[in-house]
Image 1 (cartoon, helix red, strand yellow):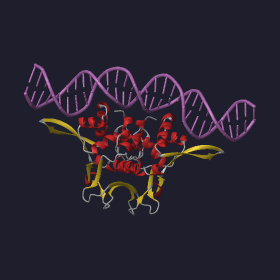
Image 2 (image 1 turned 90 degrees about the vertical axis):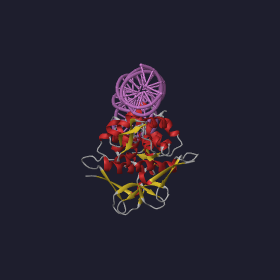
Image 3 (image 1 turned 30 degrees about the horizontal axis):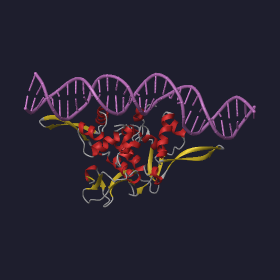
Image 4 (image 1 turned 180 degrees about the vertical axis):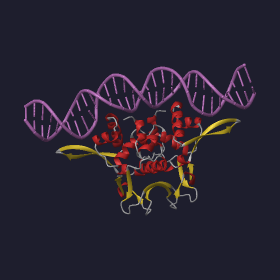
Length: 148
Length: 148
DNA sequence: CCAGCTGAGTTCGGAATCAGAACTCTAGCT
DNA sequence: AGCTAGAGTTCTGATTCCGAACTCAGCTGG
């Protein structure tokens, strides 16, 4: 199977995985959530090749994760990429990556940036929970049932 | 920059992103969490090329996400791939993908499998929370501070 | 003992994708 | 008109991927 065909599987894990599993995609989204919005800024922050960057930004716009918005810059019309609601909603994926990275791949010389709850200053973390009882869950607490 | 160099960035988002952002990696992990353990089973379930599968499984073993465990099968020693604790701990990433997929990329004909809390049967979902006050958070509720 | 089978890879050649540098296009400034 | 900056696009050699074929080890049946 071609990698691109993953997107057609009728599975709510596989479909996002097809998009976010593209090379550079997760790093690009990290950059988006850090506030980067302009082509040139992505390019210099990530040192990604321009052609691939253009391609990936295009994918995210096509998928409705980003919106290409015109804005004024030194008297000229430029465009920037901003998260849509669908894009904002990817935040848990990125935080989950970071939560895992903090525990298992921490760089020797500490973090480059911290995340804090605006209201109370507390640390931020991704978790899996039961909608019903609110319990925090691990893979072992979850039962997988094929749909009939 | 080469894609492979992402792994060397001193960032707890980038490093996991380098590993999980490899083609097929997220789909492979989905399969792992669905209980697949043997090379042949991965190969037929995902229709991935054997060479790439061998390469990706090797990466996950090198990273300590999977362990290659010998076991008896029809009187012969075989090997299977099982999640380590580090691997188990990736569960929130996969559930976050699914939570997003359910909302934004649901296939027309419903889910292929359901996830339920073993104890109470409730639905399972990924969320971002504040460790301090327990509040559920969106990207807007979080402040990013560069470390000095 | 030898052929056949099975699980688990490895090898290989053509096809697709990537990296990075150069090029293009558009508008505003001088 | 010429210069500049942002945002891509094009091009070419280098990687990586795909899929089919091949290998290898150890039963199993004859």
